[in-house]
Amino acid sequence: MKKLYIVLIKAHTGLGAVARRITHYPYTHIAVSTDRSMTDFISFSRRYHYFPFESGITHEYRHYYAFGRHRDFRAKVFELTVDDEHYRAVMDYISECESDRKMMFNIFSMATMPVIGGFRIPHSENCMSFTARCIELSGCVNMERPFWRYSIKDMDELLSEHLYFEGRIVRGSVPDDGYMTPFRLLRFLSGMLRVFSVLTYRLLSGRE
Image 1 (cartoon, rainbow, N blue to C red):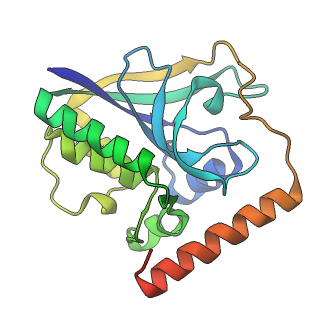
Image 2 (cartoon, helix red, strand yellow):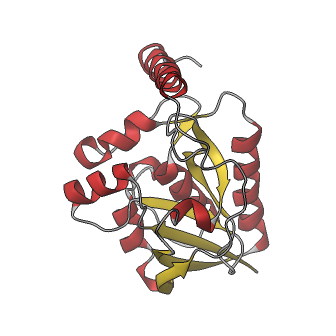
């Protein structure tokens, strides 16, 4: 048997603050971890703090969630006990996402989740749909609707019997790994244009 951790995060970002005002719910990001030390998190997210449109499947670390004046972040962690077969299915899915060069961050589904419950676009996921798919593949709970329709709050309720920890996680060391690359307007705008144009094309055409 293997352990899989589902981590809900109160993100110290502007988008996170806006989402909390809309949903009245504290957690605005969700990730998967295979290590109880909570030092490596796998999710669909931004790869650079100031460039949210440069995003996709990525490994995140504590200093991605607590940066600048923030020394820690609030988290809620669920522990799933997964048999070897289902654990391999989860790991295979993660590997497929990592090796798929067409895979993108589905920002449209993320933005509309509170209103219409999200929707599918070919070769795209967001932190919610990715994590929900991992939960589904784990075989630990019964999911009564398509995985991509589960919000962070839905997964919180779904996994209530598997609660492992809730509280603050300390940031620790901050390596210079490029995550806090300084903001540049042209790079920001070009990233936004690319993401919006590609996702719109895929949404309307149903093609990759």
